[in-house]
Image 1 (tube, rainbow, N blue to C red):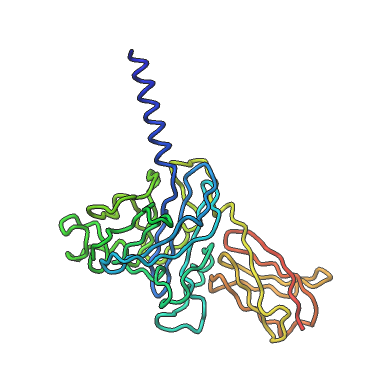
Image 2: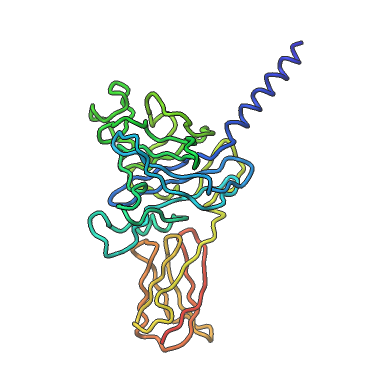
Length: 308
């Protein structure tokens, strides 16, 4: 009888663990300065999941009216997908301030370029962010829908996890990463939202953890930052302006230009540690060059550029 009971308990534990790892959840939340905003979604399941059936939603300032944006991607098992606010115009001012190059380099997609059309990626510390099915079913919730916490949610139990008592902000100017043991999202609007219960706070403008997530559901899963294949593009190409810009999917460490006989004619390090770099070509002869772009993670991408 004892062995049967133990077997039954083990089955229940296995079934519970499976249920916990059977749905997507938000694994990282970034709110920094200007328009630096990002949401990372993690797939803890054993199958690829099509994001066409999901949407990210913002509920502003204690309101209950949703501002949704649809998603489009097939997310492999144990992989992450990073959405960043689509503010990439370097001429942008005020509400259109450009997203930092470091954060742009971490993006798998950019969302909501026009505030007046879709406000989802403009969330502030007092806004709720959710991952939902397109039929409105909650998959994960950050915050409490219908509650205005003041400036941000906090870990202050005496003031209902609001900022009323002056406690340190958790959802404003912070990067939050889901704890290793969390295996599913919050699927019902909570009675209160204590960010410290499920999240680790890394501080402001910390982007290094975007693109990968370690989780109990997939302890041996692929870490996206290692599996991700970096890429870059040049503009203008052909270049007739005496320079060209390099834009990368990761922070650029250096750029080297090699002519068609294999000679290195230019090598520059990116002292600004950005995901973009301007390369001056005034002293180079016209022709075709191979450009090797080395990223901060050590990977290298080589492509042709034409100087006219």
